[in-house]
Length: 495
Length: 128
Image (cartoon, rainbow over all chains, first blue to last red; front, side):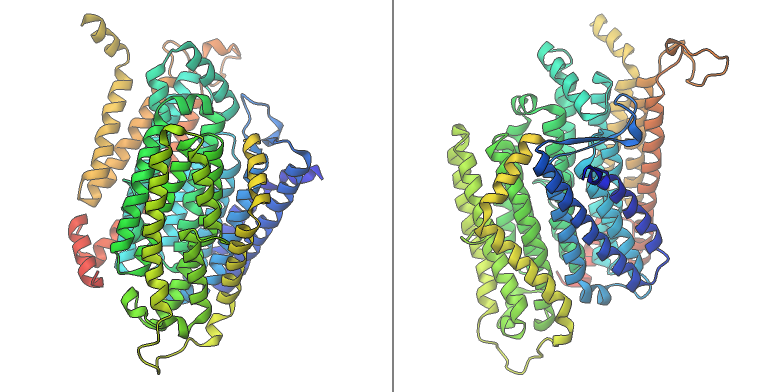
């Protein structure tokens, strides 16, 4: 069974090969290839997860069997395959659910290029989840940036091109800062592999030498990855990027690409800086402040937005704030809550984008004012939207409730931040409820005109599959959250 | 004062790299002209590579290529930073290409390179 440890390396190579092959295939074949790749990665990651749970130990995979100062390594325990599995499933469901809009939004003959980009994003996510080398991480961060920009700019309207260039600018600033941080770490330690770096940084911190360089490196890497994942005050690219992309891309970018960066940051915090150094450096307090402000500002901006897509995008900014708030609260319960929220957001935000696209079709507009009664014309999309909105608000029986509960529990671990955290949680729940329920209520109002066109059932086949799977995931993980939390806890111990 | 100046002189390349990085960073973030933003991006990346290259260079040592059969590592400089810089250059060339392609597409559509003007035109076009 130990054969399964070869899976991440083969999956990366397979994704790269598939993306090259896709560029010469017809669109339909490229789509099938891409979907099978997602399925394969999900199955492989599930096997790897099973292997990790059974052995209860993490695996360090030496590429080419070269030991550490020379070779490159992969490292995975329980968390890495779990997130990889979730990323692959969500990506496959986004490609399925957004198929109708993909065929409308993309020019003829460019479909295959979309799947080239999605395969590349998947390969980059696998590496970000599993690599044990900081510079390899940097290279794949850039691959992820370029390919997700490709997913965005393939829709040829002016607004999307503009959004892609802003996305690129912010991403490049983020990766520039990250690169400088890695170089500083390399300068003071002489290592790039995570375990060696952690050892050297621990020793440097104890001896007190290079304090300023170490602190700058930690802040540069953290800020760089925070900019790339869209933490306040760097969330301004989000509404345009997520709002005007084709719905499948909006789902992929908000649901998994930004989470890939956050998970990479978590791995860097745990495996490079060490929680001891990171949480005593003061960077975590800065993250807390920006996370908390981001939650409130994101929610208020969402409240003021009339365009539903942009509203959901602003809500993403608030959710990223939650995740960073959790990371900065405490290295155990806080990070656990953040990890659970990564899963919640990955299962909730993509179906929101996909169902909004369906509802915008039947109501003929992106504005929430025009959505009166749209729920009667496309019942499944309205149901998906409502359940995901409940999950974002944090109503019991959905995943969102469990993550809010976890955040509150984490706040008790840090007495000095208890009151502000609880206030932010309460305030954002009210704001979330306000802007999401407003749309849900509009959806189920009596329709303004009875003879409006209903969605044709033929359009909805694949969308229905993805919507139902998303709803089930949300409710199952919300009702039976305990095993998942235990799994995350065991994974965190191995990180 | 004298000591500070001497220390600055010792680390002059690092200081120059950080100044260049800041120049590129600010240009990329704040300049309105898209082409100048791309130039800023390249200055920023080059500054990072300058820092990395200067770290790998040790005075009076040879480049790490064995010619005369001499295998003592103390004779050669560290080859790893050079390898990292090469990888980095490949990355920055491809990002620059993507940025230039996007700029060309925006220029064809809006006939402007000023991001503010383009934004205003796009808003008018979509009525948002």
